[in-house]
Each structure stands twice: as structure tokens, then as C-alpha cells.
Image 1 (cartoon, rainbow, N blue to C red):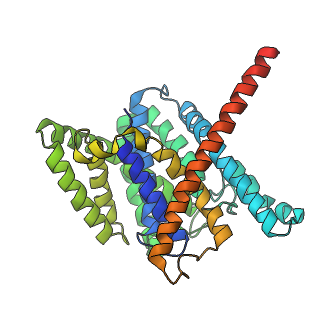
Image 2: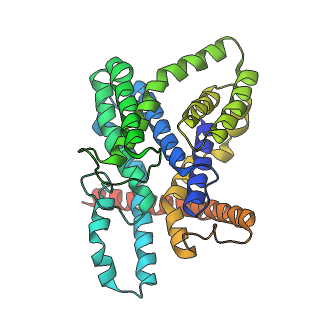
Image 3: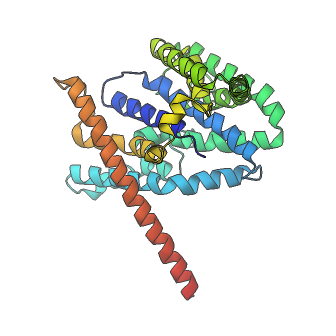
Length: 339
């Protein structure tokens, strides 16, 4: 059974990123991006251990690509249409941005292969995620124990140390190459992914202990509350990662108050909606203005309306893309049979 608590966590983090890009940071958007990479690293190991990808990086990436790309590509097309309309239907504007469009289509924006960013600017993370996942899944396939006990700790420690010494900050929106040949968004992706990967066995063992001593309901709930408080207090620095790991542990315990509430069919679309928010909030801000929240006189009301609007738009968007994708699949199968 899928753990909807983790999906709700992704949804909340996606909303915080969307609010941050709207001009107000309730929780540090930089830390949240790291948290997404940490979650990806954690579940990369879980996917590897499931064996359903036959320990193949190609199978793993292919599966993720087929699930995500229809939403990814459609959000780019919608963004281009919005820009086309806002620039008085001038085709030359679109052509002038081919250097940004091409890297984004091939999931390579801000990865070092193409220095320039894409059109849908938050999706640099998706490009980095695909590259790091492919490589790290391959390292897992080569030697799981070596990867999690030696390689991942080295990459995490050296990656964060390199970043902090170079920029004296945990911020993620740093681009280009500085004092070396490493492209900085990839350093962040690898370091955070490896932190999530190396924590997998530790978190799994902690969860087993909690279940063994029948502390699930009480302990996991208390741990969740304390971890959230710790995360919020330290959300502007790397100490927040410890709180985030506590949150993951709380969500991974099967029999607890959090899962009893969230593991309902009502929340089954949470992961897709979180993806839709992540893919499309920049488009909404393009239409409303990048600082719509910051410039509002009634910030709390505006944030609420903005989040509700994103949830509604994302739900409609997911439903529409799913219908179109299903139709195209049926149509292609029909044409193949006809041949």
C-alpha cells in the first residue's frame, strides 16, 4: 500500500516552494529543495531494494520518465503559449529562446551540459534529479553496501562542505561553474540525494525498532511534532535536515496517528497534485506577477487564495493530462492493431 503521508508531505513542500517563488518565504525554499532531493534519494534505495527494476538504471529512469514527462512537457507548452500571448503573438520571441527551450525539453537545463536555464525555471531540479538518479542507481547496482556506506557519505560530506565554503550559504539558486569544473546545481543534487540514500538503512532500522517495542502510536506522533518544530526553528540552515529525517521516520511507521489520518483514498492524488503545483506555479506567477504575494496588502488572505487556486488548477490539470494521455495511448494501440 502506498504511503500517502509522504505524498501529503510532498504536497505541503510544493506549496511552500510556490509561495516562496511568489515573494514570501514562510519556510526556506532552499532547504525545501534539498528536502525533495533527500526524499528522492531515500526512495531511490527503496525502489532498488524492491527489485522491480532488475537493478537497472535504464529501467528505473525509463519508468520515471514515462510517468512524469507528459506533465513536464505539457507545462512547458502551456508556459510557451502564455509567453507567446503576452508578447503580442510574436514568433521571433519564441525562436529567440530556443537556447532555453531545447535544454528543458531534454531535461538538461542548468546541468552543465547546457549552461542556460529553461523557460519553466523551477524545473531545473527535475533535470538534475534525472541525471543524479541515473548515476546513483547505477552505483547501487554495482555494489549496494559500498555505495551506501562509503560513496554516499563521501559525496554528501564533500558536496555540502564544497558548497558552504564556496558560497558561505545553503542557497540552491547558484548557477555556473566557480573555482573548479563542477556545475553547482549538480553538486547540490548529488549531495542531497546521497544524504537521503545513506539515511535509508538507518531510518528503516529505527522504524523496525519503533514497531518492535509497540511504540508506534505515541512515539511516532511525539517524534513528528518535535521534528516539525525543530525543522521550522532551523529552516534557514542545514540543521533543519535532522528535523526532516525525523519527519520521514514518523511518516514511515505504518501504525500511527499520522498514517491513520492520511492513508485514505481521498489523498490518493496528492503526489500527482504536488507535481502539478511544482510544474505549473511559475506559469500562474507569470500571469499574476512574480511578487504578487509580497506586494499584497493582505498577505495572509492572498497566500490562502493562491494556495487554494493552485490546488484547484493542479487537480484540473492532472485530470486533463491523464485523459489526453489515455486517449493517445488508446489511439496508438488502435493504429498499431490496424497495421
